[in-house]
Length: 384
Image 1 (tube, helix red, strand yellow):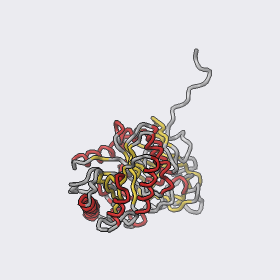
Image 2 (cartoon, helix red, strand yellow):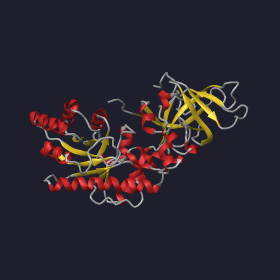
Image 3 (tube, helix red, strand yellow):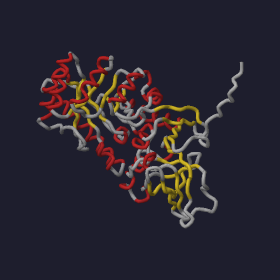
Image 4 (cartoon, helix red, strand yellow):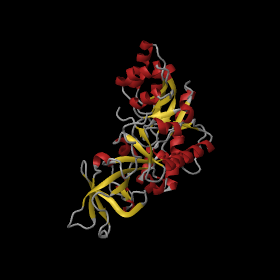
């Protein structure tokens, strides 16, 4: 018997409710293949960081056959465990308040890797584990120059933390986040080598004190792709934003604008009559984020809150989101816009400055294969 309901029309960029997040599947696949090939050629394992993607469908492409992954929140860890991943690195230093949730993952069969950088945390973990009869796999975070967290490889605290962990010690890890301050391939390569040297030194000191490292982990998307990088002594590379890339990474020269796989679809909702080179869109700080990372780059690479593309994803030079409110974005053109261009109700796409916070504003991806048709909706996990 035929349905009494009319068939649902095929979704397309023209029909989606705005603002929303659009993902180009072919660009995603190309970005994944580039990183996987680079890391494999260097003889180490890739442990993809899902902090940017936060999506099981993308994880299946980035870490096929439930290969080891990295996450930045326990909610991500729980989500990916639910979807079948069992080797998960929670790569953020944490306090004792998160031990109970981490224990829940261990009891569910997850080979969870945790990370600490303070003797008090290490001692709390060991005491908790003894009480609960659990074994953690815990790495010590090494500060290789980013100063976000961790201990330096020469610090006396390194051995103190390892001794406090005891049988829960599993290795060392670092994040060369200072690569984001580099402004040339040579500077990025220098950061990458420093990153590797720091974990080598730390692992050697620990081994000499009776703590051999099962895991020696490094990772940032720019340093992972640095030319000539020697990864001797490293067991794995973590990287995340490479899946999507963004305008800041393009500004660093790590990728091109054409490699950026995500955009925010928006509708034109205002045309100030007295300002012919401006118009308003319905994507503001809540849809695009307040990240203005490209402001730190040379002026010609400053994208404001994002560069504009047309509905087919082609970059429109000279157009940028110059100002945001919660639900409004002000697009400014370097020159007066032609009469009749960007009428009310027309649609544009915004390239993100920083893909991680932009994607975090949305609950799903609308997946396209490069045209205006939507072939899938992939949900995301957000929150902590």
